[in-house]
Length: 82
Image 1 (spheres, one colour):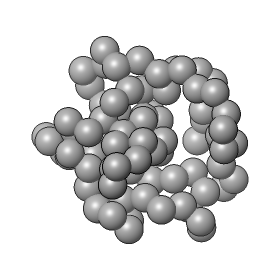
Image 2 (cartoon, rainbow, N blue to C red):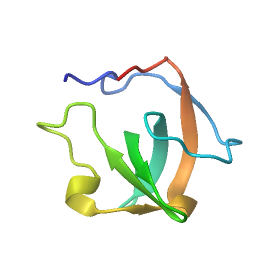
Image 3 (cartoon, helix red, strand yellow):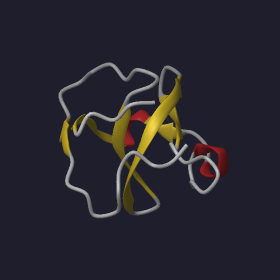
């Protein structure tokens, strides 16, 4: 699947969401960078992220689960679909 967002594209996110749901797209902090990926799985304190372009994405398959405290915001615009 090709990426839903282009490099440099403006996005709008909200950080008041208390529940993280699989299939939704979030901004999170990893390795000193802010990244945007889709949630595949959620545990009680960690999130597993995947990229929409799985063939060329660096995601949780490479760097592992991300602590929920590193999740910054849920992307609400543009609407990104699976």
